[in-house]
Length: 347
Image (tube, rainbow, N blue to C red):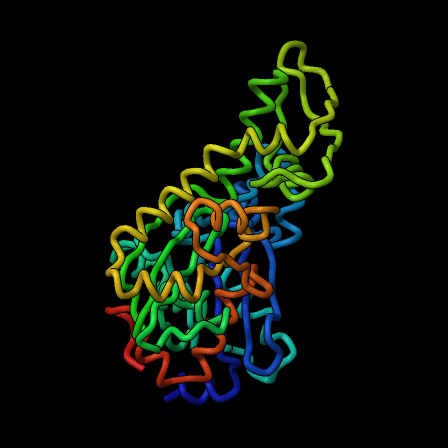
């Protein structure tokens, strides 16, 4: 009874609990939070020092007693306690301007396709411990398709490739369900690791995760560019341990990430091979939609289109498709009931 009463004053939330970023959506304001999934903890006192943007600034720069923890690995919870505290921080932040002292919202959360029952339960328990009244779990690729305004409930095939930080999910959706899919650990983080490895091997130089990500964003591409790009990158020389700067171009970075890009394309082809022929003909007609941060890599849509001979488009505001899809489901109980994953709370 108290839960229902507190729920009347709480804002229902759509949450994209991502490896790199956590996004939160409310019906009245849209996306209200888009912050890194990082929590800074003082290991001496077990105190949370910072969450999100503030915590990300500390990554790689902390003294021994402070840890900047990324509680999600490959889209699943690796540190339950820290994830719970991070979710509680974000839920309280959304309700900071409201009248309720103890927010008890309904929450729709996106989960990976290959998640286990134990991992699924961990997501539900973390959200409930953080204050959620009811938790509805939805496959991230389904949420991304809904957020991209694709006709997921129709008897026609929709193919979506959601490239996040920790996972790439390739799925064919029809009649409100996932017909065929592949989930792989090659995604945004892997591209960053490819770049770190390339600098180590080619230049005997060590660069950090944030530098690698910046290189990817600035000059990374999957296909040749009309105008070459280059940038200066600073790191530590592995031979003498001193600071060093080198200039790299887009062609070198393309070489660094090429293997991972090819793995994604190969898995798209495999997914097409295991899809029923009637649905494949729909995909040829309607094309493939790319969502997630990785979809914004220059020329990726062209590379996939060339390899599969199918039209490819990047969804509008690809970064936020999953959380927008979760938000749409909060306002559409009928569709939510159709696409809910098993073993979640009943609507």
